Length: 273
Image 1: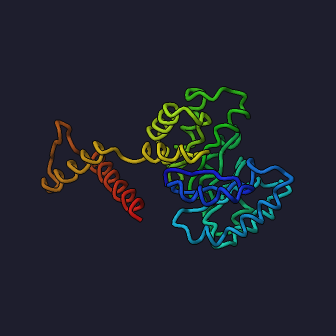
Image 2: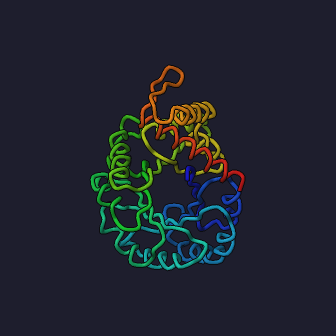
Image 3: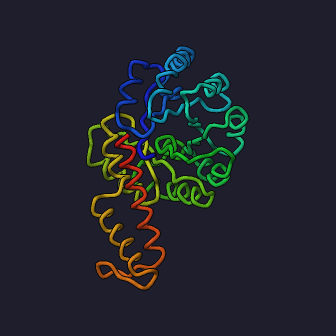
């Protein structure tokens, strides 16, 4: 899952467009995108749309309001719907924040790490039962630390989230949004850096961001071709020493090449479906 597209739960007219945007997952947002006065009606919109969510091949996740808010428990009731495939939990500052969610649903949990406390406790959060992968809430993290949003300023936080995910043995994390909607260069640069650091996907706040994110987190044609040459050369050598394009191929190189080939096949299969 590379691209995660937000759609406000209070805007049901946008649900269909979000599902058709070629994102790997759609996050129906009950939190930041919905005003307090509209929370109840937004939940009703989600309930009415559950059938269309279930019929779509796109994975649909629900971002609920944070634990401790007036809306949290009612939001969690929607997890019983067949069309909701997982829960995105904001303000996941510590493992305790996930306990109430795990008690209500067995569906995957994607905690958003968006504070200093959350980054500090990222490994504990990642190890909680039901957690599938972490999400970096970069904008809220920037606010919490009163720092700027540059790559250098947030590099340490991103690195801790990537490392915590690997140590916990869960899927690689999802990077935060690029808020510059009309800056294609910035989006491509942000996504490329996130992938190089070890993130496996990225949040999108507009459908036009989806294509660039999918491309950034998919192997390039050159990467796929090289990976296939490595795998084929190693198999021909029957485990013996081999070099490809002047590069010695040892076991870690082979395993990475196999991973790229597998990812390429899975992406192609998803597109064909």
